[in-house]
Amino acid sequence: MDQNLSAEEKKKIYEDLFDITFEQLKSKKISLNEGQKIAGFVLDNMEGIIRKKEYIVFLEKLAKNWAIYNPYYLKNKSEKTKLEDEKKISELTSKLKQLIN
Image 1 (tube, rainbow, N blue to C red):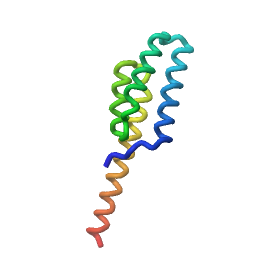
Image 2 (image 1 turned 135 degrees about the horizontal axis):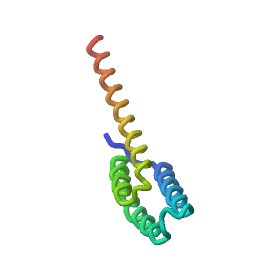
Image 3 (image 1 turned 180 degrees about the horizontal axis):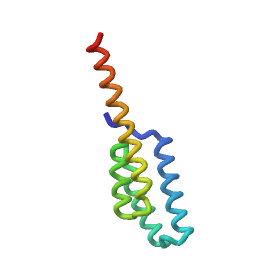
């Protein structure tokens, strides 16, 4: 089952995205106009996100529009996949233990 994002997780996401954007602006890899577009996109889309799965979909869209976010998207996607895999392994282990006993 997909988990909800906590207020702390959402805050961290905003901070991470701000840091990435700010670094790109500072190094002049994106323009101020592009930074404003990104900020609008983030604000318009993040507000309605409740579940972690929705967050990953949002990051995928963000990374497709602005390649500077691709590493962040891939990192978060792999973490989510790892957690899902660990949960499945735990469930299977539990079922196997029940069968053995």
